[in-house]
Image (tube, rainbow, N blue to C red; front, side):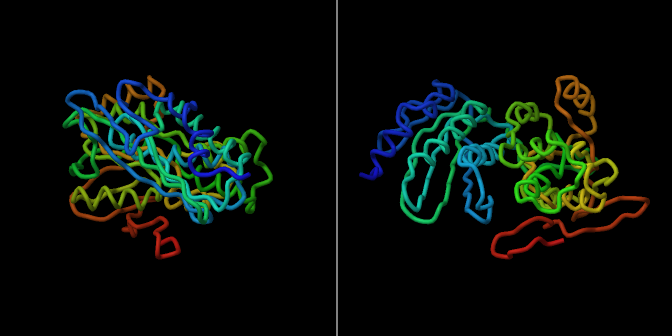
Length: 332
């Protein structure tokens, strides 16, 4: 006899590690009632973000359910990290073509691993029947006035990124086995798979940006696209020094043109892109000493748009850069 919706919830979600992964202080009432109750810390604001993962759009059809569960939560938590917030709880809206208990067990195992890594509790959701679709809403909190927004960058601010670029797109190429360099080692292949399937939302570093960064965003759509968002919301131009873009040793296995395409437009990196006032430059040394691989890759300037500087040439580029839904292709 197949499981019904309520038995599915009882077996895979109620009383599981997903209900115990975060801090108890912020969740008053979780799974089991009509809605959850949260109690944010005194003096904090709630931060809410929703992500939807659709098979064939956000992830390939060939996948391991535990990897999919991890990715679904990690990409949603990354938006919370980008605003210097801490995650409190999340809801899961899961649409399934049918109930496969083996699939559910593996999916929930990956979801629970992400919940533990990001210290966040499952507090509710919904299950329905239909084409596979995963909707995750994350609720976080941030001290009032300390959130980092996309607006706020000023001309002269440093443009910084908190980790290597291009690995998400290279990881997808590895997952799909597309024209891989023969020089890639087993360790590098595994590294890139992990960067795609199990990205690390940078919550700890995100909180470091409160009251320091003037603007910020996570790199999900691609560096050019997300730099374009900062430029538009802040009313400034963004200059990017191509020679300073950080990449992993694994990405170096590809030709330069492919590396650059993925670093600029690939997306799925989930590192933080932010602007830093020049007066706070000393924070860079502090962060690097603490193990955060922050790199300055450009600056905010008077004007608008996104500009690339390389080999003595300065060129304005289309800030949309990455994938856009309903357009069906990348826009360079």
